[in-house]
Length: 139
Image (cartoon, rainbow, N blue to C red; front, side, top):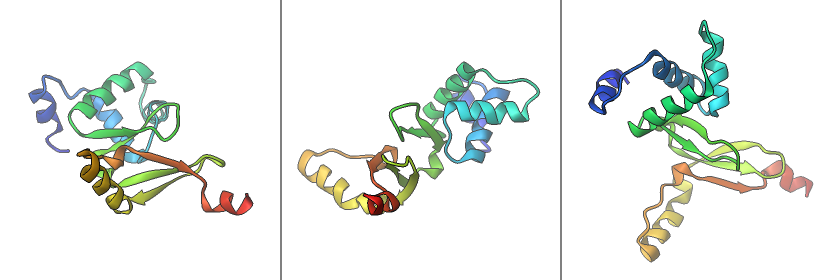
């Protein structure tokens, strides 16, 4: 990330303090909604950051390939660093717990999509919904 300023300028953007704060918050939090990023940045800054500023910063950082998002539920996306995009999110529809599975568990599925449809799937952007072990036992 040391060349972030150079990459932003090459894309016609500047490394603003707000973008750096948002990127730092995403890195600290691991996975975060824009609202959680606002809270994290505001807790460490002298003044609160507007949600619209966070969304614009996330958009710029996503265009540069530094952050990506996953829709863990049907509400707001969860953002994380692209270097952290090495897993699939599994979400329990009963208790709401979110866990991670390595992308390798989906290799056969991805290969089948490619073989039958010519579709190259990016499962790191996916959230699989179902029942966790605990909720299955209670059913």
